[in-house]
Length: 101
Image 1: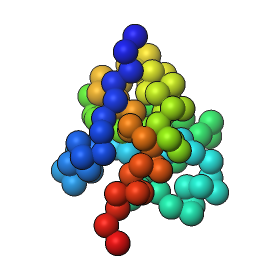
Image 2 (image 1 turned 90 degrees about the horizontal axis):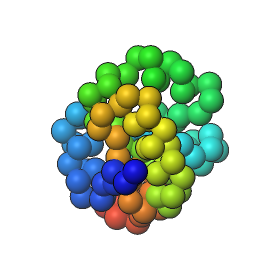
Image 3 (image 1 turned 60 degrees about the horizontal axis):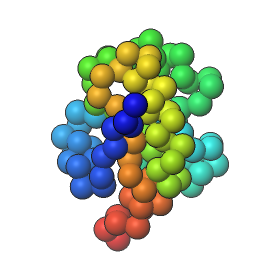
């Protein structure tokens, strides 16, 4: 299965549209030190409610540190029936490197 990925520019367009949910799978400390706003931190405690309460057709952008672990999370969410899930290429590191000051 090819994992759907999204580049920074397309992800920013989705963020600005307000259409997508951004999901941070990094650890709590990393998330608290900086994250894409708005985004949800997804972990074992928040996963079940997220799956239950999120529309299956809503775009979801998953990110981690560098865009590797997010591919596994993207695949998992697709297997749960979500239709439009994307792994952010380059992860938060790449996103942050392009953030205007």
